Each structure stands twice: as C-alpha cells, then as structure tokens.
Image (cartoon, rainbow, N blue to C red; front, side):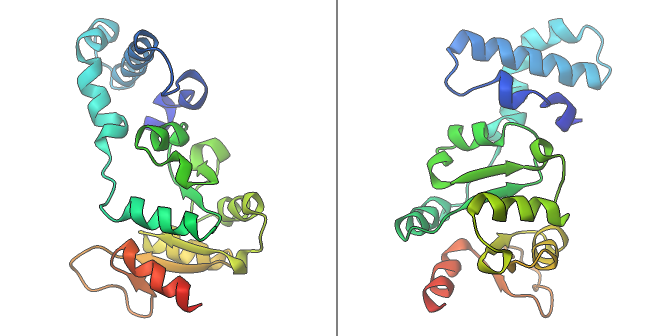
Length: 189
C-alpha cells in the first residue's frame, strides 16, 4: 500500500517546498492512505490527522543509528563512491535529505523507482552502473540475509551482513555488528 501511496512522492514533494505546500502535500498523501484503508470521509480526517500520520510515515519515523553519520563521513573523506540501495517507495532521496544524509551518497536507488527490488540482481547491477564499476569491486552492506547478503553475492558483489540482533549470526556469513566495524575491514583490503 505504501508503494501506491508514495507513488509520486519523488516528483510531487520536496523538502524545500514552502511550509504551506508541504502541509498540503502531506494532507493529500494522508488522504490516499485513508482511502486505501477504506476510511469514510478520508479527506476530512486527513485534515485533522495529517501531521500525526506523517510522523508515522515520514522521515521522522526512521532511526539513524549513532555511528551512521561518522562512518559515512569517513567513507566520503576516503573518497569511496557510495550508493544507497533500498527496497523502498519513491522519494527515498527526499527522506535522506530530511535526515541530513543526502550528501553522504553519490546515488540513491529506491526499488519502487527502479521497479525492481532486492534480491533481484538488476537493482545491484544498476547500482554498479551508476557507480561506474564492476560488481566484484563493490562491497554491499545490508541488514537482511536474503535481500542484501545473498542477493548481493548472487549479483557478483562482495557482501557483508549488518547483524545487529542479539541472536547469533547465520553460520558461514560474513557479518559486522555495527557500521564502525566496516572501516577496519576496508583499511585492511
């Protein structure tokens, strides 16, 4: 449903819109949410609840882990090209802007915009094409075994699973517990 609701987010919305236009856009988005859910009088209820629903669906609902900004800045300082590849609805670049992360990435690729999702190799191939490099020269770091680790490896990328959970990591899978552990691995290679 969110892919449908955010279908035009990348072209209709911008973090740089004037506040009244942003509020209008969010009301329209929340109206679409309510209509998808079959809520009676969706437009009137969106007027009342748009701010609260945006807190749940918008960038404020996301958690940026504490080490993320530092690690991305270190990678940027070392001149690594960086692509964000996510199974996400349209407008992921806007979310990155609002979270203060846009400058960390050379490319932001959302599955809805490409119309193909991880673990499909085509999304990884697109990332490699945008980065201008071969798959075997790319290290993909992701937090799902199938979509990220296995999908990346099947597309010919090097892969590391970001495994933050308390349970043991999968056997035979290269893992890191947080992004800080990525930097020493890159320095060693």
